[in-house]
Structure formats: C-alpha cells, structure tokens
Length: 166
Ligand SMILES: C[S@@+](CC[C@H](N)C(=O)[O-])C[C@H]1O[C@@H](n2cnc3c(N)ncnc32)[C@H](O)[C@@H]1O
Image 1 (spheres, helix red, strand yellow):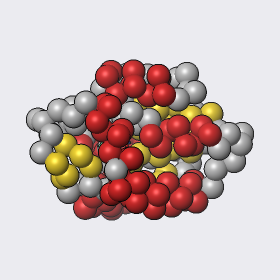
Image 2 (image 1 turned 30 degrees about the vertical axis):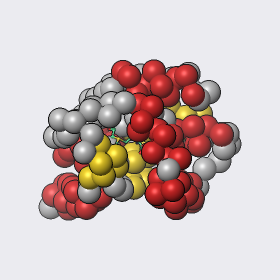
Image 3 (image 1 turned 180 degrees about the horizontal axis):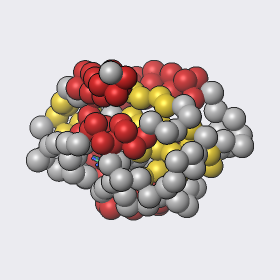
Image 4 (image 1 turned 180 degrees about the vertical axis):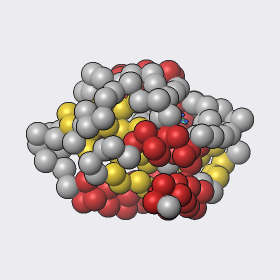
C-alpha cells in the first residue's frame, strides 16, 4: 500500500493488521466512536469514505446500516477492502476529482488521507459540497514505522477552509 506522500510501501495486510496491535486497537477504539458520533450515522444514510485504504473504517460504517462507498488511489488496498467487507462500491478514484456529482452522498468522511494528497486544496474543494464532513487524522504505519501525519492533515483542511472564506 503506497501512501501518496510516502515512498515506503506498506502491504494492505500489514496496514490493516496494525489496527489489531495494542496501539492500533487503542487508536481505532478512540477514533471510531468519535467518527461515528460526528457523522451521526443513520441506517438510511449514504456515506463516502475518501481515501478509504483497506476499508477499516468503511466496514464499520457499513456495519451500522448506511450504504458505504470507499474510494482510493491504491488498487491493492481496495482489493483488500473488497475481500474483507460487504461494500460493493469501492472505486479506484482520486480525491481531487471525485467520480460523483455534488450531493451524491448524505455524509462524507476521510480518515488520515487528505494529508497524503499533494493537491490537498483541490481535494478539500471537491469534498466540500458534501453536507457533513468529519476528518480525523492519526499516526499511521509506514515502511519505517509510525509517521506523524495528524497535524498536517488538520492544518491543511483548516487552511483551505479559511482561504476559501476570504
Ligand atoms: C494512511 S491511509 C488511510 C486509510 C484509511 N482511511 C484508514 O484510516 O485506515 C491513506 C490513504 O489515502 C490514499 N490516498 C492518498 N492520496 C489519495 C488521493 N489523491 N485520492 C484518493 N486516495 C488517496 C492512500 O492510497 C491511502 O490508502
């Protein structure tokens, strides 16, 4: 699994298995309830997960009842997601050019993904028409262990929003 801003590849299996490590279990166990609460999920919702990777969060959304769609640039990660979850729609797509019209989804989420997009202002602009956005970021496993990404992602989104407001 290749992270856009990282030259060191991580296999989808290794990436997803990180959520089963003590640290990953703790972080996922904190993040998922936060995300779930921020999205205020309802059974009839449709939810787009931008940069879904192996689908760890997408699977959890789908298990709550909404129609979950995950997209990513990494075909290997998407194949893993297809094998491990019920979601049928997991397109290979770029966050800077979403293959859906505005308001195609009730809710949108992106976990630790926009911080890897070189053209993040374009990605944020693409995702803004969504009605409700929740963004979480964390330290993620890379070929060299854990890498700090959270501030980059959050600051990036905040900067893009204030730039658009001016
Ligand atoms: C750290 S992983 C996060 C995966 C998943 N959201 C999670 O939290 O487990 C970052 C993901 O962003 C994806 N990504 C990076 N740039 C992207 C882009 N321009 N469009 C779509 N996905 C992208 C990568 O392929 C990778 O799967």
